Image (cartoon, rainbow, N blue to C red; front, side, top):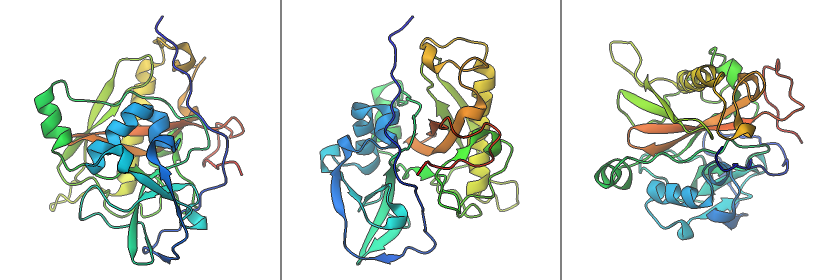
Length: 283
């Protein structure tokens, strides 16, 4: 049996209400926060060292230069912003004064599934697909009522109409397909290719709703495949006596290479019924 991997979680915080229609103009009343001490999804998912590696690959600057902007807006109280995007054509989420800001992360209200960040097998591929690639900002599945994340059992069935801006193209940066990669603790890595263009003659980019369903479908298939295989880390075992699809919230995805994304996964808190259609952060 391998070394135990402890859960990464924090105390419940206040609810998230993401009121992003057009980027609102807000007052300059925010403070900075060092990325490494943020305890956001990225740090809790990858661990501090790999999260710093990820953000450096994303923003192309040292993680020590990444000061997260918090307290920007009461409706985004749990969001961590940065003042620069990873790609120049990325629309801002809010504008403070005349300063555009982009969401890099959120503070979770429950246990995040830890995953080892995916990395290309050799140095030349790493340079090509990570270091020199223009990665996209993380995608968070924010619902119209302000909740962050979708229940896996609902999203995998296509119940994604609650997504804010769900009808808009998913901001995946182009291409026709991409890999969704899962590194669930105690299991072999799992990846599946999804098509990110629709079947119309114009081959348009898929919508955010469609993307959320496809990502959830990959997670669901992984859990179905793995349910009869014990994890090398028992606390993360998948199956009837462990973690099931009903326990999982699909929070969003992060692009870890030019051709691949990893899902951000969180355990639903115990007070949420497995039959619940929607996930509410505890107040």
